[in-house]
Image (cartoon, rainbow over all chains, first blue to last red; front, side):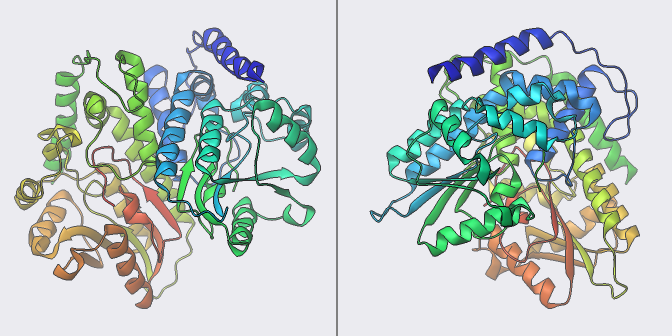
Length: 258
Length: 258
């Protein structure tokens, strides 16, 4: 299990060194229709795009902007992504500590799984960090390997909220048929003691993630849970109805799930 | 009026050149309790803090982190802030163009004023870009000068939504007693033809911005308006109830209004 953590960091180091000298991008048409962007200006434009995504300002998108492939790669494998994850985890922990829990075991914290607890960077590194159109079959093959490493700051938050006495509920867009491999992957990555693991059943597959996840939160409320915190890398993890008291949007510039 | 635009850009240039060589920060205790941060790492940590704010991940805060003063200053007066504003404006415009308007004059777009249509950078440049605790009296003196320049990408969006046929409603936390100076400032900065300008009356002053603005949006709905878009630099401009179909969070790392 500690091997997974090391893998994640070694992986980061490897990509930082192998990619970091490859920043001479060719001029290409860009997001804001500037056609002569290179170097620093391109990086700033791509950062604006990334931050706009984090602030939920973008319309649904299917792939990252082509001219931002290098930027997204550097963001993901460099320190920025790790620092962003650490800060969100820290803010969530600070909030969690202020919550007064009842002793009825109904104070809940929801975690999404992909890009929230488990990292699919190894998969996306092979698929141009979100520039390739999402391929369900290919991604399923990766999921079935059960090798996704833990996102370390999220593992820390996960353990912190458990220690504080929250019930942890895992709510994922993964399919019910991946329950067993998901459980194995979570455990080998260091996650344990969740109260529920909710995956999509066949009747949920046609629903938008926002609707599916809101319905599940609504069921939790009906079961008496008080949802204090919700951690997810997609706005569709956090918005809709039956919202948590505080939501924590983890960074993810690689893909968008409506 | 074009003089205001020039002022804004000249101002940017001036600060970029005068501040940009002043990046040798002393080590100070930081957000994540690292005490030895300097240079690139400090910048990345401060950026994580800024982006967390844009994603609504931070608890209410009264001043920017002390160690991030230089970072916030550089962000605000350099190209990053301008690029972020441009992208949000562009996304909003793209969305506005997709909206099918009725011919009853009830399709509305809401704009906040401070840091959304008008820029208070000249004021905040004199107050350490948000490191000084907010001083109502000092800020009111600045407001009463009526000299806040237009935020150019927002002026473009403003004109675009007017041209598309939206009714523009201005909803601001400014006080009713500043109506006249606010109108003069808006007009001299290039804004015109709004449908309503809503300011805080004495009975609204004790309310949280989220509540005050939600109540006003609710009144708009009762008046038959369909609120398609809402542009604001604070999450309290955008959240609560009677939400717009799409919200656009403009960047603002200088202050937080709950």
